[in-house]
Length: 336
Ligand code: KG4
Ligand code: ZN
Image 1 (cartoon, rainbow, N blue to C red):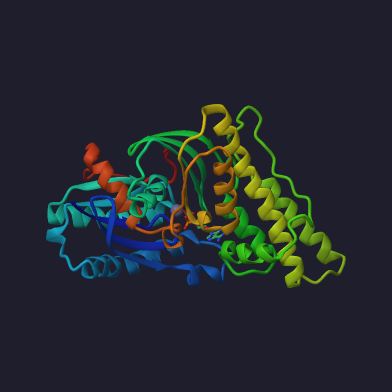
Image 2: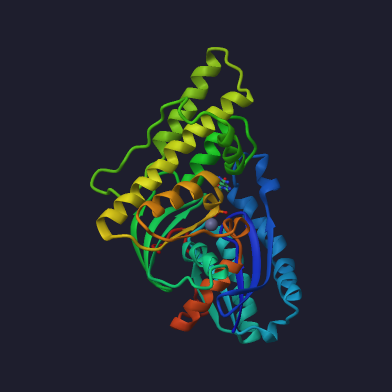
């Protein structure tokens, strides 16, 4: 069964064709990063307009690269939540028009479930149940995935998502947006014990995350040091990146360890843009090994937003009977 996936929840316009939820036939991603970089972050209205310009060509390329026409497609899967509302509406409206004009079923997909499904595309043997940690620019969610379409939220970020914290710290260090990948490289050469940062916990919600205090400590330190005349050089950047990453990663592995102790060892699936972080990948793998739990990591090219992950999850949603009608809407927030 061939599913055409469409993704436009943030700053990537993407389309892909996936067979039976597991095999990528094509995957096209048009990134808007260069457009938003000058503003230091995603500007929602500019994102919507850029999606509108790109979506037709991106979908056309995805079909061409798969050497298929719309007639060969069995269903159209589209991200309808969560994300930037104008951006979501662009992809959703396009998908609706295409689905109803071609007579194909339309399948709404939750963006976070899509990130998890990126792993089905590379790990043939991966099947629920497992625990998943989605760490991205907009989300930090710890979930029990009981079945392909049965999700149970265990913990989530109460303020800044992990990727957002990475990007804001990168920005104060003068790194271009989005700074996550640059912070990753710098952290590899910095001293992780140089600065003592802390990330708080949430009273009564031990699996939840809070990264805004950690981000503020980094920003305050950089401001204080620059006021004292310190130049932000590569050594300073690297030590901050390493100390910040160490704290953020520990916050995540502490929750994972607690989960293993509480519920027993289980398979763990990492996903989302920040799943590309080498320090997080290493720490999650080591934590799981300690408890004899198996870890599934997405390849770097499937960590960030793409439509192959939406088509993969769309396949399982389709099998479950999930359909979108002409009244299907987009939602900026929606539980997983
Ligand atoms: O999943 P994604 O493409 O978009 C959302 O759904 O939010 O994630 C983008 C985020 C950005 O914050 C970016 O800085 C971060 O992922 N990121 C990284 C790395 N690569 C991308 N963060 C830390 N280390 C990386 N290597
Ligand atoms: Zn995402």
